[in-house]
Image: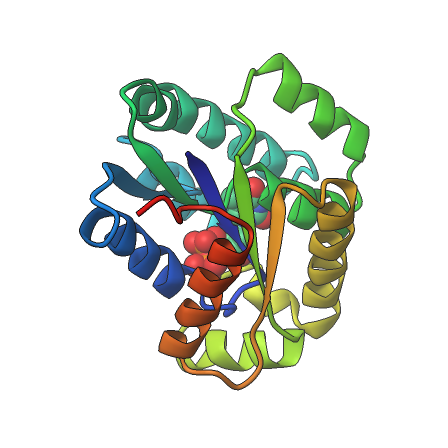
Length: 206
Ligand code: TYD
């Protein structure tokens, strides 16, 4: 299965993705890899640094870089793993581009829908959205240290991204699972995630 984890900055998706891939391997005895965007392929680190530095000026540059990053990530990591029968857990994927570059920056949605089709990007079987308020997300991102260029955009930008994610989840409700993150610990959030999967009949074969 191809599972993507999405959410605004500070939503806790990295912690959950790590717990989840470990759970697939140790608890479900599945073969699984954990990867991320941007930068989850050999060579991606350079590109990731460039994009989060905030030094790009043309309004399409960051979108092109994220699409390039995804194309190489799909070709070198995601598709080979899926073809070999492994599960792929990916932190951020094409929905991040739709939420950040379309809802956040105002670029056209249909262009990215077409590009994803043309590029034959595999569509996730499941996308988990860790939904957190922009205020709380930014507070958590700040507590981790230096903010990247997206986090520095502040509450109004993060509100647009969150609205984007919620709109995207309504376009394709069967693919999306929304986990509301309020004051729970990461262990509690993880247990809610597993219970939600079981109630949807996903990964409850053993
Ligand atoms: P990431 O390293 O995942 O940040 P964090 O761990 O703080 O969530 O991603 C860096 C930033 O890149 C993040 O603010 C979201 C943004 N981003 C986009 O704007 N578009 C995209 O397509 C992707 C994959 C990420």
